[in-house]
Image (cartoon, rainbow, N blue to C red; front, side):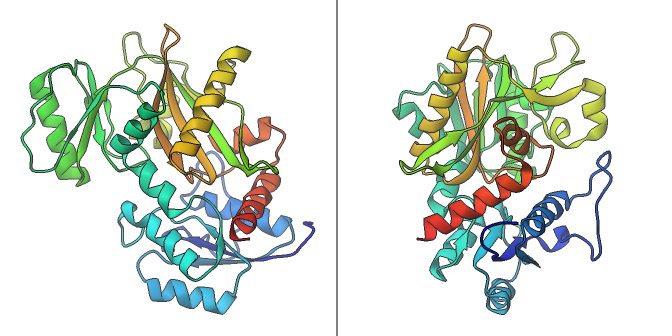
Length: 342
């Protein structure tokens, strides 16, 4: 039981509201609404009064739900609005305009982090190593800049969750580059970014904060996306299938685990993560994606504010390794939301 019982409105997608009466789910085949279920159950375990609201297409329904519940804090699990991921920052802006405390990142951080080109430019200005890249705007001719060497990884400039990323996203010649850029333009409906492919370990640095009287963000233990059965010479890419297809995960032996880094390297990761947090004006919780090359080169790939929060996912597991149970993590996010409002 928490020290203070709060009225919490969990804001999520209409299709992700757990079914009435749901008491659990099969972890071997988890439903799409598992994050919403896990968060709501943790909130109830903490003694809070919880209401779930599915609203991602109608702002009037969202505001009506807020007026009906009159929450002390909104647990914001919306990652898009009107079916457009770039509008998640407007949800945060709306909650600020009606002066409601809400969990997660604010509109400025969501905007800066979403743009993979802009975020790299901001981090490079802070002295952080980023891969060389080029943006290909929709409708523009595909002409590779001199000095941008193959192989290149082509992906959406603004979409997340590996949307549009497949094995074919790694290109080694001009024709493949043009085809993949066209794929992003037509299928994902966004500008494309082609960036230098850095082979190495895929590291995730989870950040929670700011915490403490000094307002310093807390960097959790580094996590790693590992491939136990990846065939030789096959590049390690976190494709859409690697992240979300159980069949692909079983075939390649995909699993996340503590990264087991030397102390000095763990400190390097933490410094880079804090720099990204500050440069991109992040808040609440975020995951910083990095690549560690065999040479020791540590490269910033992208920042993910409000990452996946379900039990057993990278962020929750990193928090557990740092001594935060799942309910304690959820309570920490509520506390951060209330502190920011004050």
